[in-house]
Image 1 (tube, rainbow, N blue to C red):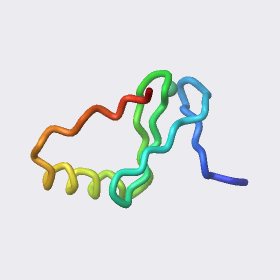
Image 2 (image 1 turned 45 degrees about the horizontal axis):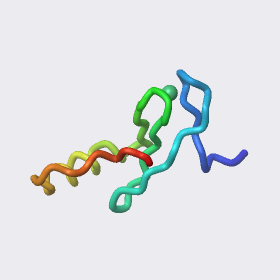
Image 3 (image 1 turned 90 degrees about the vertical axis):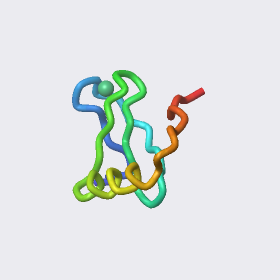
Image 4 (image 1 turned 90 degrees about the horizontal axis):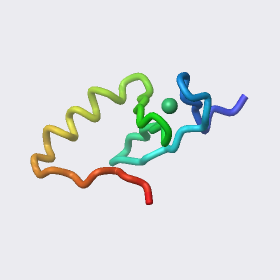
Amino acid sequence: MKDTTLKCPRCQIEMKQIKREEITIDVCPSCGGMWLDHGEIPRLLEINNNQRAPNKQPNSK
Ligand SMILES: [Zn+2]
């Protein structure tokens, strides 16, 4: 089984993968839910702490 794309447990649709630094975040385009793999949350928090400037919203076109 391939696990390249996850499905949103709520919407049952494929989630969009966003690469941030070296972390891949799965975002559901429908409900906007974000899902991280194990160990990615502390890494993401670390990155957010380092970036104090507000980031632009990861809105898709
Ligand atoms: Zn969803």
